[in-house]
Length: 96
Image (cartoon, rainbow, N blue to C red; front, side, top):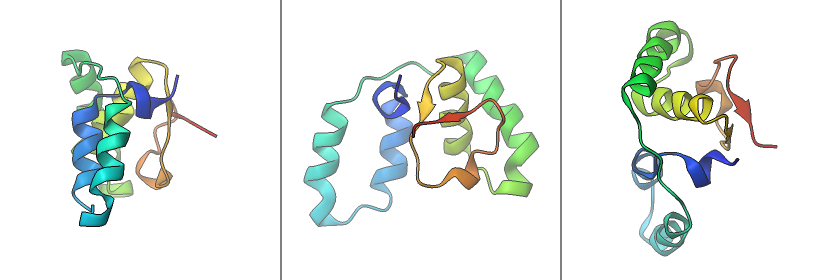
């Protein structure tokens, strides 16, 4: 399972759109049309909070990173990212 197809697209969308340039808008729109959303439930939020407590200071983990990591772990999905330093959680596996 690939986290970019299966994670909560709202968090992923926010992380990508914040740095998007106008020339990238169409590509991003097409990307998000191919994704499915999964819910972020209370347990996923709890796990994200634990990740924030553990890694916020040492690895600059932010709320979106923690929610994505917790979702990937909950759904046993591989995380697809270029910035692995924000995902030091031993439970997270990466898409190769």
